[in-house]
Length: 435
Image (tube, rainbow, N blue to C red; front, side, top):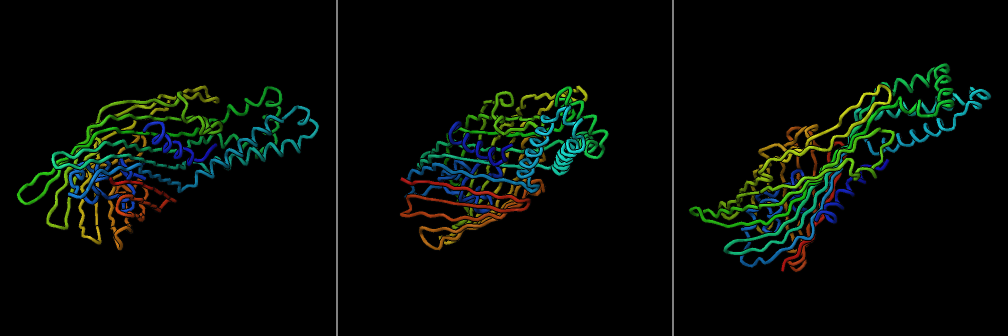
């Protein structure tokens, strides 16, 4: 069994290659990610199409076409060390199956003690791994974005392609599997009976009594749209309004199988995958109060969509019962408010989600708040830091940081990283060019 990092890599590659989420919401932008995931009010006009389309209208007279090509990020949370646990149980399963396959009636009769000891030891090791794995989960996110922003006094435009991926791996350990294996381990009589039965009738008489499952759910959502923004004057207050109508395609993966046959190479099998295409829209507003204050509100995915995964059915070899494994992925409006204070040297920002971030119905929702800061000690250097928290306490709280380089103010390279509770790690990078 491969580690969940394989899934993250698969998701990110799919976003950039086939189809062209550290993102707490629906975008990745390295500068904003480094500042605690904020950006609704503090983002630049070049990144507005990814975060808040209203920011697209905030370009200055000297600003020209900006191309983000690309922005990418990824985050992994594995507080239970599930990656190593899955590797360990894979080894135990292989060992257990090898012992079963090697059982012969002759060995059992001629060397019962040695044969049964090996068989009982393998069963005990596997039972221990199942007990350790029970109830554990791992989560991963990846996101990517490409944008071409064209400022204009009449109507600013941007062409944007962005995507985000969300994945979760969990185990469902059947206590009867553990009891069965412990029974073999602890009783010579039971071990002997099972071993003789396997030697005569084949190893499947044993393996069909093992029915624990592993479940992997993943969603990849990609958007392709045109952002439009215009600035108006309301009294003495410049107010920018933006909207992004977009085509939205979603791929859902419901890889549910016996934990003893789990193979991440099967994630992309058509048996577990389905897709859906629809329409959606983002919108936003931003206003400048005085020289230093900006406030904004963005709404991502204002059209709600619920998409069902494929229905996967697994038959219990012990009871003959067939169970159905199905989930629903929820795309729902994500409304975020933000404020920023800025001058030539410093930018301070704060964002708060006004609605919950939803995903699969089988998972708990999150709602994020973040704060961040950027210091620009040199014209070509920026240093950033921030903090993001889930007020619902269902996702990890993280510290973020990063740097930005802008030689000649034409080529911009931004890097970010994050670390948080529950063994959460993440990183991102972005390349943008101004013409």
